[in-house]
Length: 124
Ligand code: HEM
Image 1 (tube, rainbow, N blue to C red):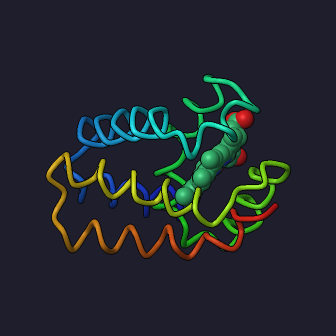
Image 2 (cartoon, protein in one colour):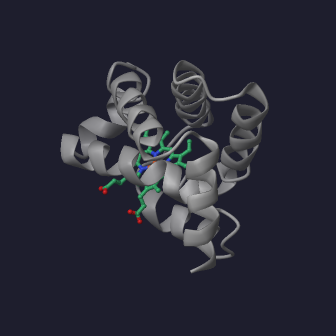
């Protein structure tokens, strides 16, 4: 409940549901075009990538939730994501946010939230 409320606030700050959908779309394209991420997504499938991008922001923005770390570890176990791949994905998010005109301070704030998840995503 709390997570939903927090996420809704973020959505508003990003410019509403349409803006959020554009960000997710852009993130999907950027991740798909990135050869550094390809080895991981080749082990799953495109549906998984689509699910990934759709849920990605919701999780990041709701990351005040105390269980987020455990959820991220569970979701990425077996994928052996490298620090470089994590950084690439985080950068794609920043690019996607910038491209929809999100204010720079907000983009930085979101990037910090993503960075906090690094140790729960890398290396499992
Ligand atoms: C940068 C920070 C990242 C965040 C915030 C993130 C977020 C998420 C989320 C929210 C899920 C879904 C969890 C669920 O449905 O319970 C997930 C699953 C997954 N993530 Fe990530 N992720 C990140 C980085 C990466 C990277 C770098 C890769 C691959 C190169 C990756 C590959 C995957 C895959 C393959 C799944 C499973 C998808 C499925 O089968 O449904 N993630 N991630």
